[in-house]
Image (cartoon, rainbow, N blue to C red; front, side):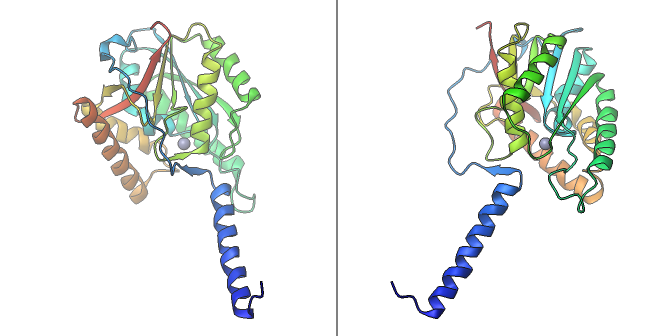
Length: 267
Ligand SMILES: [Zn+2]
């Protein structure tokens, strides 16, 4: 094939653009599901069939970053806190943006701020917090992660595990979220006390918690993460979270809800 000078230049420019676009997609931590997985047909569980809201009930929550818990399930956690469930929140990474080169971000300073914000938010729903200190943006679901999580979960001995969806993701998701979910569900198989697994950020919900009266509280919880959600950005994120709660509510007949895909070992 004999390409003219102009054609060669075009090939180099377009090839370069494709390479840079592909490289950037793999460097940044978000993922897009271009092809959707078809969720399974699951019978809707009766809300009161899930014994979440009992005093002293041991609940373990596994998230990827400080702010995930408040963003996705702030209303549920508030209700659990009000019921005096015994909540332990495991935060897999510090959300310190350590995947950027060090001249762009101060990971140690970020870690300090983000842990403090998480502790402030979790105190309002009376949760203990365990920081695992994994790599932000680069969390892997491997043997080591699953083993560390298994060890922590065995110490807690919860009856319910709440975590990110490990299978039927929403269209745009974060690698850390997926890997946190996958590791948590993998670890749960080795923790005999766990009877319920409730997955949030799912495309296949079968259960929802009514948070219609808790919007103000959830909004405050989000804004406890001031380094992430303050001012105009805070308003923008809050509006996204509100819309999502409305969408999830519609599926289950509530004004606002947080939806889960629950599975039980008892069934
Ligand atoms: Zn996150």
